[in-house]
Length: 398
Image (tube, rainbow, N blue to C red; front, side, top):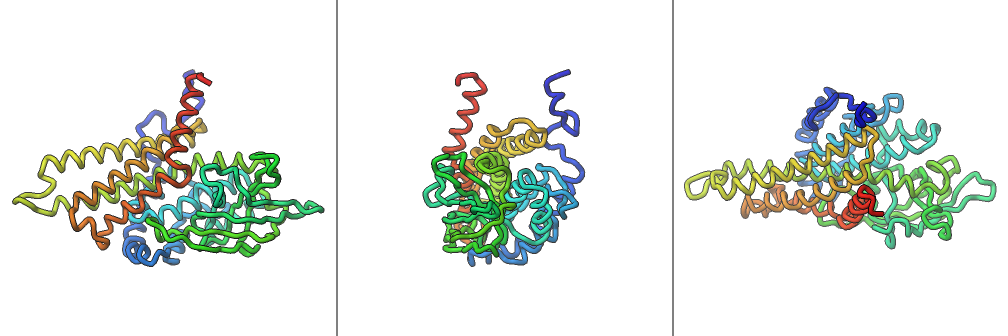
Protein backbone atom coordinates (compact mmCIF):
# COMPACT_ATOMS: atom_id res chain seq x y z
CA UNK A 1 0.00 0.00 0.00
CA UNK A 2 1.15 3.56 -0.69
CA UNK A 3 2.13 5.91 2.10
CA UNK A 4 -0.99 7.96 1.44
CA UNK A 5 -3.14 5.01 2.51
CA UNK A 6 -2.43 6.15 6.09
CA UNK A 7 -4.34 9.35 5.36
CA UNK A 8 -7.53 8.19 3.65
CA UNK A 9 -9.41 11.10 2.18
CA UNK A 10 -13.15 10.55 2.50
CA UNK A 11 -13.45 11.45 -1.19
CA UNK A 12 -10.74 9.39 -2.88
CA UNK A 13 -8.37 11.52 -4.95
CA UNK A 14 -9.89 14.89 -5.80
CA UNK A 15 -9.06 18.54 -6.37
CA UNK A 16 -9.32 21.00 -3.51
CA UNK A 17 -12.53 22.26 -5.10
CA UNK A 18 -14.31 19.08 -4.03
CA UNK A 19 -16.60 19.66 -1.06
CA UNK A 20 -19.11 17.46 0.69
CA UNK A 21 -22.77 18.21 0.12
CA UNK A 22 -22.94 19.50 3.69
CA UNK A 23 -20.06 21.92 3.04
CA UNK A 24 -21.68 23.19 -0.19
CA UNK A 25 -25.00 23.78 1.56
CA UNK A 26 -23.25 25.61 4.38
CA UNK A 27 -21.46 27.91 1.92
CA UNK A 28 -24.80 28.83 0.31
CA UNK A 29 -26.43 29.47 3.69
CA UNK A 30 -23.56 31.68 4.90
CA UNK A 31 -23.55 33.67 1.64
CA UNK A 32 -27.26 34.41 2.10
CA UNK A 33 -26.82 35.37 5.76
CA UNK A 34 -23.84 37.62 4.93
CA UNK A 35 -25.72 39.38 2.13
CA UNK A 36 -29.09 39.73 3.83
CA UNK A 37 -28.17 40.29 7.47
CA UNK A 38 -24.54 41.48 7.65
CA UNK A 39 -24.10 43.65 4.52
CA UNK A 40 -26.69 46.32 5.46
CA UNK A 41 -24.96 46.90 8.82
CA UNK A 42 -21.28 46.89 7.80
CA UNK A 43 -20.77 50.63 7.34
CA UNK A 44 -22.65 51.63 10.51
CA UNK A 45 -20.76 49.07 12.63
CA UNK A 46 -17.41 50.25 11.27
CA UNK A 47 -18.24 53.91 11.98
CA UNK A 48 -19.57 53.10 15.48
CA UNK A 49 -16.66 50.68 16.13
CA UNK A 50 -19.21 48.28 17.62
CA UNK A 51 -20.63 44.89 16.70
CA UNK A 52 -24.43 44.89 16.33
CA UNK A 53 -25.82 42.40 18.91
CA UNK A 54 -28.31 41.20 16.28
CA UNK A 55 -25.41 39.89 14.18
CA UNK A 56 -24.05 37.83 17.07
CA UNK A 57 -27.56 36.52 17.75
CA UNK A 58 -27.96 35.69 14.06
CA UNK A 59 -24.67 33.79 13.92
CA UNK A 60 -25.86 31.60 16.80
CA UNK A 61 -29.32 31.11 15.28
CA UNK A 62 -27.79 30.06 11.95
CA UNK A 63 -25.70 27.40 13.73
CA UNK A 64 -22.44 29.11 12.76
CA UNK A 65 -20.98 29.28 16.28
CA UNK A 66 -20.59 25.54 16.87
CA UNK A 67 -19.55 24.40 13.39
CA UNK A 68 -17.36 21.50 14.54
CA UNK A 69 -19.08 20.88 17.88
CA UNK A 70 -21.09 17.64 17.93
CA UNK A 71 -24.88 17.59 17.89
CA UNK A 72 -25.17 16.32 21.49
CA UNK A 73 -23.57 19.61 22.58
CA UNK A 74 -25.82 21.67 20.31
CA UNK A 75 -23.33 22.05 17.47
CA UNK A 76 -23.52 21.35 13.73
CA UNK A 77 -21.02 18.46 13.81
CA UNK A 78 -19.33 19.61 10.59
CA UNK A 79 -15.74 19.42 9.36
CA UNK A 80 -12.85 21.82 10.01
CA UNK A 81 -13.06 22.79 6.32
CA UNK A 82 -16.69 23.73 6.94
CA UNK A 83 -15.53 26.21 9.61
CA UNK A 84 -12.99 27.60 7.11
CA UNK A 85 -15.77 28.04 4.52
CA UNK A 86 -17.88 30.00 7.03
CA UNK A 87 -14.95 32.30 7.89
CA UNK A 88 -14.08 32.93 4.22
CA UNK A 89 -17.68 33.71 3.21
CA UNK A 90 -18.28 36.10 6.12
CA UNK A 91 -15.01 37.94 5.37
CA UNK A 92 -16.14 38.67 1.80
CA UNK A 93 -18.77 40.94 3.37
CA UNK A 94 -17.23 41.93 6.73
CA UNK A 95 -13.88 40.73 8.11
CA UNK A 96 -14.95 41.96 11.60
CA UNK A 97 -17.87 39.53 11.72
CA UNK A 98 -15.61 36.87 10.23
CA UNK A 99 -12.99 37.15 12.98
CA UNK A 100 -15.63 37.09 15.73
CA UNK A 101 -16.88 33.78 14.31
CA UNK A 102 -13.35 32.52 13.61
CA UNK A 103 -11.93 33.02 17.12
CA UNK A 104 -15.06 31.54 18.69
CA UNK A 105 -14.92 28.42 16.49
CA UNK A 106 -11.25 27.66 15.75
CA UNK A 107 -9.78 28.74 19.09
CA UNK A 108 -12.37 28.74 21.88
CA UNK A 109 -14.61 25.82 20.92
CA UNK A 110 -11.70 23.71 19.72
CA UNK A 111 -9.77 24.11 22.98
CA UNK A 112 -12.83 22.99 24.95
CA UNK A 113 -13.55 20.12 22.52
CA UNK A 114 -9.98 18.83 22.29
CA UNK A 115 -8.50 19.42 25.71
CA UNK A 116 -11.19 20.00 28.36
CA UNK A 117 -12.60 17.28 30.60
CA UNK A 118 -15.97 15.69 29.76
CA UNK A 119 -17.73 17.58 32.63
CA UNK A 120 -16.35 20.91 31.31
CA UNK A 121 -17.45 20.05 27.78
CA UNK A 122 -20.95 19.17 29.01
CA UNK A 123 -21.09 22.35 31.04
CA UNK A 124 -19.85 24.88 28.46
CA UNK A 125 -20.19 23.56 24.89
CA UNK A 126 -24.01 23.77 24.66
CA UNK A 127 -23.96 27.47 25.63
CA UNK A 128 -20.98 28.14 23.32
CA UNK A 129 -23.00 26.58 20.47
CA UNK A 130 -26.20 28.49 21.20
CA UNK A 131 -25.74 31.82 22.95
CA UNK A 132 -22.46 32.49 24.80
CA UNK A 133 -19.62 34.22 22.95
CA UNK A 134 -16.11 33.06 23.81
CA UNK A 135 -12.72 34.76 24.02
CA UNK A 136 -9.13 33.41 23.89
CA UNK A 137 -6.76 35.17 26.31
CA UNK A 138 -3.06 34.65 25.63
CA UNK A 139 -1.37 37.99 24.77
CA UNK A 140 -0.22 40.48 27.42
CA UNK A 141 1.44 43.93 27.39
CA UNK A 142 4.90 42.35 27.69
CA UNK A 143 4.24 39.06 25.88
CA UNK A 144 3.10 39.30 22.29
CA UNK A 145 5.17 37.18 19.91
CA UNK A 146 7.07 35.96 22.98
CA UNK A 147 3.82 34.47 24.28
CA UNK A 148 5.35 32.40 27.08
CA UNK A 149 6.87 35.43 28.82
CA UNK A 150 3.42 35.94 30.36
CA UNK A 151 3.07 37.52 33.79
CA UNK A 152 -0.57 36.59 34.57
CA UNK A 153 -0.27 34.21 37.51
CA UNK A 154 -2.29 31.28 38.82
CA UNK A 155 -1.90 29.95 42.34
CA UNK A 156 -3.43 26.75 43.64
CA UNK A 157 -5.24 26.90 46.98
CA UNK A 158 -3.89 24.92 49.95
CA UNK A 159 -6.81 22.49 49.76
CA UNK A 160 -6.37 22.09 45.98
CA UNK A 161 -10.00 23.03 45.29
CA UNK A 162 -9.41 26.28 43.43
CA UNK A 163 -6.92 28.53 41.63
CA UNK A 164 -6.45 32.27 42.10
CA UNK A 165 -5.75 34.28 38.94
CA UNK A 166 -4.03 37.66 38.92
CA UNK A 167 -2.77 39.85 36.09
CA UNK A 168 -3.96 41.28 32.80
CA UNK A 169 -4.34 40.33 29.15
CA UNK A 170 -4.18 42.63 26.14
CA UNK A 171 -5.45 42.65 22.52
CA UNK A 172 -8.23 40.20 23.36
CA UNK A 173 -10.69 39.64 20.49
CA UNK A 174 -14.44 39.38 21.30
CA UNK A 175 -13.80 40.41 24.89
CA UNK A 176 -16.38 43.23 25.07
CA UNK A 177 -19.23 40.82 24.25
CA UNK A 178 -17.86 37.50 25.58
CA UNK A 179 -19.14 35.74 28.69
CA UNK A 180 -16.61 32.88 28.54
CA UNK A 181 -12.82 33.14 28.48
CA UNK A 182 -9.99 30.69 27.98
CA UNK A 183 -7.19 32.17 30.07
CA UNK A 184 -3.53 31.16 30.05
CA UNK A 185 -1.59 31.81 33.25
CA UNK A 186 1.82 31.03 34.77
CA UNK A 187 1.94 28.90 37.95
CA UNK A 188 5.70 29.13 38.50
CA UNK A 189 8.02 31.45 36.50
CA UNK A 190 10.98 29.22 37.45
CA UNK A 191 9.46 26.43 35.35
CA UNK A 192 9.30 28.64 32.25
CA UNK A 193 6.79 27.48 29.66
CA UNK A 194 6.20 24.27 31.64
CA UNK A 195 4.50 26.30 34.37
CA UNK A 196 1.70 27.52 32.08
CA UNK A 197 -1.89 26.39 32.62
CA UNK A 198 -5.12 26.99 30.70
CA UNK A 199 -8.44 27.71 32.46
CA UNK A 200 -12.11 27.94 31.54
CA UNK A 201 -13.19 31.24 33.12
CA UNK A 202 -16.69 32.75 33.26
CA UNK A 203 -17.08 36.52 33.13
CA UNK A 204 -19.22 36.23 36.27
CA UNK A 205 -16.15 34.99 38.18
CA UNK A 206 -14.94 38.60 38.11
CA UNK A 207 -13.25 39.26 34.75
CA UNK A 208 -12.86 43.02 34.37
CA UNK A 209 -13.05 44.40 30.82
CA UNK A 210 -10.85 47.48 30.85
CA UNK A 211 -9.74 49.62 27.90
CA UNK A 212 -11.31 48.98 24.47
CA UNK A 213 -8.83 49.69 21.68
CA UNK A 214 -9.55 52.13 18.84
CA UNK A 215 -8.18 50.38 15.77
CA UNK A 216 -7.22 51.01 12.14
CA UNK A 217 -9.34 48.13 10.88
CA UNK A 218 -11.72 45.34 11.96
CA UNK A 219 -13.25 48.09 14.09
CA UNK A 220 -16.55 46.34 14.83
CA UNK A 221 -14.59 43.46 16.37
CA UNK A 222 -13.90 44.30 20.02
CA UNK A 223 -10.28 44.25 21.22
CA UNK A 224 -9.83 44.99 24.92
CA UNK A 225 -7.50 44.81 27.90
CA UNK A 226 -8.73 42.41 30.60
CA UNK A 227 -7.86 42.49 34.29
CA UNK A 228 -7.92 39.59 36.76
CA UNK A 229 -7.84 40.62 40.38
CA UNK A 230 -7.79 37.62 42.74
CA UNK A 231 -10.29 35.71 40.57
CA UNK A 232 -11.24 32.38 42.09
CA UNK A 233 -11.52 29.57 39.53
CA UNK A 234 -12.64 26.05 40.58
CA UNK A 235 -9.89 23.40 40.21
CA UNK A 236 -12.10 21.43 37.80
CA UNK A 237 -11.95 24.41 35.39
CA UNK A 238 -8.32 23.66 34.60
CA UNK A 239 -8.20 22.69 30.91
CA UNK A 240 -6.00 19.69 30.19
CA UNK A 241 -3.14 18.72 32.48
CA UNK A 242 -1.30 21.01 34.85
CA UNK A 243 1.75 22.55 33.15
CA UNK A 244 0.50 21.69 29.66
CA UNK A 245 -1.08 25.04 28.82
CA UNK A 246 1.80 25.95 26.50
CA UNK A 247 1.13 22.84 24.40
CA UNK A 248 -2.54 23.76 24.04
CA UNK A 249 -1.63 27.31 22.94
CA UNK A 250 0.91 26.17 20.33
CA UNK A 251 -1.29 23.45 18.85
CA UNK A 252 -4.45 25.54 18.74
CA UNK A 253 -2.76 28.47 17.01
CA UNK A 254 -1.83 26.22 14.08
CA UNK A 255 -5.55 25.69 13.48
CA UNK A 256 -6.27 29.35 14.17
CA UNK A 257 -3.81 30.39 11.47
CA UNK A 258 -5.75 28.47 8.84
CA UNK A 259 -8.79 30.42 10.03
CA UNK A 260 -6.99 33.75 9.63
CA UNK A 261 -5.84 32.70 6.15
CA UNK A 262 -9.49 32.02 5.28
CA UNK A 263 -10.47 35.44 6.60
CA UNK A 264 -7.79 37.05 4.43
CA UNK A 265 -8.74 35.25 1.20
CA UNK A 266 -12.39 36.13 1.80
CA UNK A 267 -11.40 39.77 2.37
CA UNK A 268 -9.28 39.82 -0.81
CA UNK A 269 -12.07 38.28 -2.89
CA UNK A 270 -14.69 40.62 -1.44
CA UNK A 271 -12.63 43.72 -2.26
CA UNK A 272 -11.71 42.58 -5.76
CA UNK A 273 -15.27 41.50 -6.65
CA UNK A 274 -16.60 44.95 -5.73
CA UNK A 275 -13.84 46.80 -7.55
CA UNK A 276 -13.96 44.74 -10.76
CA UNK A 277 -17.74 45.18 -11.00
CA UNK A 278 -17.29 48.92 -10.63
CA UNK A 279 -14.48 49.00 -13.23
CA UNK A 280 -16.60 46.94 -15.65
CA UNK A 281 -19.34 49.56 -15.36
CA UNK A 282 -17.25 52.76 -15.42
CA UNK A 283 -16.31 54.27 -18.78
CA UNK A 284 -13.35 56.51 -19.59
CA UNK A 285 -11.96 57.41 -23.05
CA UNK A 286 -15.11 55.87 -24.56
CA UNK A 287 -14.69 52.36 -23.16
CA UNK A 288 -15.06 50.36 -19.97
CA UNK A 289 -12.06 50.47 -17.64
CA UNK A 290 -11.89 46.67 -17.79
CA UNK A 291 -11.35 46.89 -21.56
CA UNK A 292 -7.89 48.40 -21.07
CA UNK A 293 -5.25 45.69 -21.25
CA UNK A 294 -3.24 47.26 -18.44
CA UNK A 295 -6.25 46.84 -16.14
CA UNK A 296 -6.94 43.31 -17.35
CA UNK A 297 -3.38 42.27 -16.53
CA UNK A 298 -3.57 43.74 -13.03
CA UNK A 299 -6.87 41.98 -12.35
CA UNK A 300 -5.54 38.65 -13.69
CA UNK A 301 -2.42 38.89 -11.50
CA UNK A 302 -4.46 39.47 -8.34
CA UNK A 303 -6.98 36.73 -9.21
CA UNK A 304 -4.09 34.28 -9.58
CA UNK A 305 -2.63 35.30 -6.21
CA UNK A 306 -6.01 34.90 -4.47
CA UNK A 307 -6.40 31.44 -6.01
CA UNK A 308 -2.89 30.46 -4.86
CA UNK A 309 -3.68 31.66 -1.34
CA UNK A 310 -7.00 29.79 -1.39
CA UNK A 311 -5.33 26.53 -2.44
CA UNK A 312 -2.71 26.89 0.31
CA UNK A 313 -5.49 27.51 2.84
CA UNK A 314 -7.83 24.68 1.85
CA UNK A 315 -4.90 22.28 1.53
CA UNK A 316 -3.85 23.11 5.11
CA UNK A 317 -7.46 22.54 6.24
CA UNK A 318 -7.71 19.13 4.56
CA UNK A 319 -4.27 18.10 5.91
CA UNK A 320 -5.51 18.92 9.40
CA UNK A 321 -8.67 16.84 8.86
CA UNK A 322 -6.64 13.89 7.63
CA UNK A 323 -4.51 13.96 10.77
CA UNK A 324 -1.33 14.88 8.92
CA UNK A 325 1.24 17.46 10.08
CA UNK A 326 0.10 20.88 8.86
CA UNK A 327 1.98 23.47 10.95
CA UNK A 328 4.24 24.52 8.05
CA UNK A 329 1.33 24.70 5.59
CA UNK A 330 -0.77 26.67 8.09
CA UNK A 331 2.03 29.22 8.53
CA UNK A 332 2.50 29.48 4.74
CA UNK A 333 -1.23 29.94 4.17
CA UNK A 334 -1.56 32.60 6.85
CA UNK A 335 1.54 34.50 5.72
CA UNK A 336 0.74 34.43 2.01
CA UNK A 337 -2.99 35.10 2.38
CA UNK A 338 -2.30 38.17 4.53
CA UNK A 339 0.16 39.50 1.92
CA UNK A 340 -2.32 38.86 -0.89
CA UNK A 341 -5.15 40.50 1.07
CA UNK A 342 -3.15 43.69 1.45
CA UNK A 343 -2.16 43.76 -2.24
CA UNK A 344 -5.65 42.88 -3.47
CA UNK A 345 -7.48 45.41 -1.32
CA UNK A 346 -4.91 48.12 -2.13
CA UNK A 347 -5.31 47.46 -5.86
CA UNK A 348 -9.11 47.42 -5.50
CA UNK A 349 -9.00 51.01 -4.23
CA UNK A 350 -6.88 52.11 -7.22
CA UNK A 351 -9.12 50.35 -9.76
CA UNK A 352 -12.02 52.48 -8.49
CA UNK A 353 -10.04 55.74 -8.50
CA UNK A 354 -11.35 58.53 -6.26
CA UNK A 355 -14.53 56.60 -5.50
CA UNK A 356 -12.43 53.78 -4.01
CA UNK A 357 -10.85 56.25 -1.61
CA UNK A 358 -14.21 57.29 -0.13
CA UNK A 359 -15.66 55.52 2.87
CA UNK A 360 -19.20 54.97 1.60
CA UNK A 361 -18.21 52.52 -1.14
CA UNK A 362 -16.79 50.19 1.54
CA UNK A 363 -13.75 49.34 -0.56
CA UNK A 364 -11.18 51.22 1.51
CA UNK A 365 -12.44 49.32 4.57
CA UNK A 366 -11.12 46.04 3.17
CA UNK A 367 -7.66 47.61 2.95
CA UNK A 368 -7.81 48.86 6.55
CA UNK A 369 -9.05 45.45 7.67
CA UNK A 370 -6.30 43.62 5.77
CA UNK A 371 -3.40 45.03 7.81
CA UNK A 372 -4.21 42.96 10.90
CA UNK A 373 -3.53 39.77 8.93
CA UNK A 374 0.21 40.39 9.17
CA UNK A 375 -0.02 40.85 12.95
CA UNK A 376 -2.43 38.66 14.89
CA UNK A 377 -2.18 34.92 15.66
CA UNK A 378 1.52 35.09 14.83
CA UNK A 379 3.16 37.98 12.97
CA UNK A 380 4.55 37.57 9.46
CA UNK A 381 8.07 37.30 10.89
CA UNK A 382 6.97 34.55 13.29
CA UNK A 383 5.37 32.75 10.31
CA UNK A 384 8.63 32.99 8.35
CA UNK A 385 10.57 31.69 11.36
CA UNK A 386 8.13 28.78 11.78
CA UNK A 387 8.35 27.86 8.09
CA UNK A 388 12.16 27.86 8.13
CA UNK A 389 12.40 25.74 11.28
CA UNK A 390 10.13 23.12 9.69
CA UNK A 391 11.97 23.25 6.34
CA UNK A 392 15.26 22.77 8.21
CA UNK A 393 13.76 19.78 10.03
CA UNK A 394 12.32 18.27 6.80
CA UNK A 395 15.73 18.54 5.15
CA UNK A 396 17.48 16.94 8.13
CA UNK A 397 19.68 19.99 8.66
CA UNK A 398 19.11 20.12 12.39
